[in-house]
Image 1 (cartoon, rainbow, N blue to C red):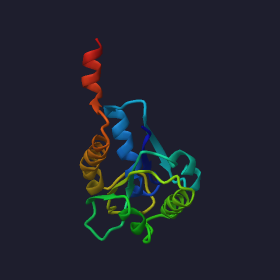
Image 2: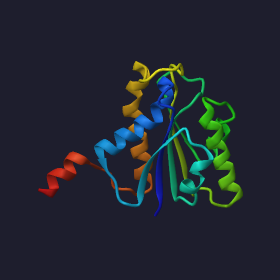
Image 3: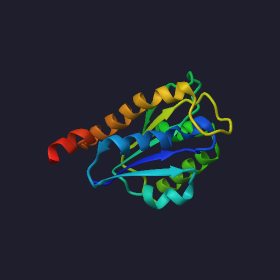
Length: 166
């Protein structure tokens, strides 16, 4: 099994960084099996094609514009996702849409695709998330864990894993 959890975002554009912050929380707090790769994709686009190719499940954490209230967590699956990227949040999303289309053309599209998105309150230049989006990290992280568990991935809190080892 090959699973990728990919956080996307620009750390210099306030809430645009939420995808990266979600996967940082995942890595800091949970132990995942070796077949699950967690990657900070930053603002990369086509450079991610090889790492995204032929995955059993690709889980993307990102900022999304859906028209919902700032801080809302949105979960989309498979064919719902490319349609969302017709409205760009930031420069990297065009790249993600392009990568997904290229993967479909090369027949390397992930077998399952999940997007866990958070609606930004601010995309202004600045480091740090707005309070609304900061509050959304926990529910978004919970949705990433749901997506992992739906693929049969055992997820363990690091504290629980540390307690068992000694």
